[in-house]
Image 1: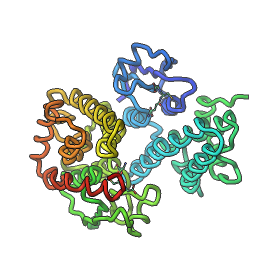
Image 2: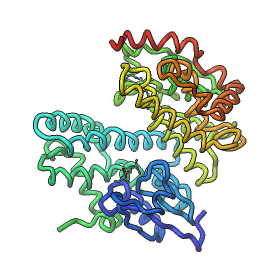
Image 3: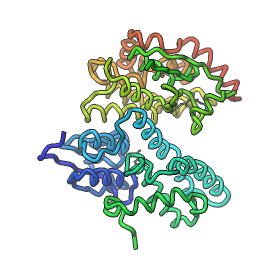
Length: 207
Length: 219
Ligand SMILES: N[C@@H](CCC(=O)N[C@@H](CS)C(=O)NCC(=O)O)C(=O)O
Ligand SMILES: N[C@@H](CCC(=O)N[C@@H](CS)C(=O)NCC(=O)O)C(=O)O
């Protein structure tokens, strides 16, 4: 349980979609935290000490105790600060949410990273593969405001990676991976996200 | 309402083994349905349209995919008997971290070890031992990964135990020499009825892997 004296520190990176997830969850729960910007090209002793296994951000330090891996951290936050729950109560719905979160990280993200790394015909193939994966998400959104249903939930927070990392990176890379004609539901969902105070705060629009 | 529980599985799978152990820990009867992965059944395609993989747990008609998610689901849906995850949020997070570690870091190298011979195989062997050592140091002097009671991380890892013999054969190493404490842990786990009755027999995996290599055209 949260206490008044809670000391919450996030080792993160402004540009990392993984670290943004944690900011969103903490902001949603109204948990004050200190943000410590990390340089992953020159890892700090605190990062190496806190996440010796993967040596990656984000790491959440709660009263000095480290937790790594964004999906694990999100669940920890939900278990520790129980107001504004992000995961549903029902075991089946929880399992479904975890399934989609894993899908975003292990399939969509992995595939999207290849789009960033490839050029020419090879890129066309991975763009196609990424779109195939995104179709599952598109289908999930039919008839819903958010992936979590009526309000922002666990999968939405995880999938901000698609909304604000992939869909902004595609402009930089110069290839539209998620065109509105093909993914109207995803675009509608991004609009819904942008109307939320917590998103405005954690993902300010760039212009 | 009587629970109807079905498991779609393929016997050598270290993933399916996890789900079987979790069900056994909770004393849940289930209908086991062996799947042919080279000729996927319509029920598998219907129940896991995204990945088309086993294991799939079907509870009262509703499918749950991904073995570690199934283990957690089983713990949440049948909370009374033998809790598999700790209730303390921090301990729970640690358990999930290590379960995820097994999936991200242990499985990949095992594929390289029994895959095509060559540099990749050597790199796989090195990586595998290194990852087991990381796990061994996390285990430390505890009885199980979670302390005194058998749970989530034990379940995540023990499914690989039946594969150890064949991995040693292909990778030219001895896990017992490299990680004696981990082997002692595995032997403790196997004493549990839930594990003993769910784990595939080592010798059968050792016979199965060369056949699999032929089937997928490695040999
Ligand atoms: N699975 C991790 C991914 C985190 C991740 O990829 N972090 C990157 C920055 S965006 C990192 O720290 N990379 C440093 C490195 O790989 O050395 C999570 O969900 O937290
Ligand atoms: N992450 C999955 C992995 C499951 C998996 O890899 N299943 C394999 C058999 S061990 C499978 O069904 N493969 C069929 C295929 O890839 O077509 C889990 O934990 O359940």
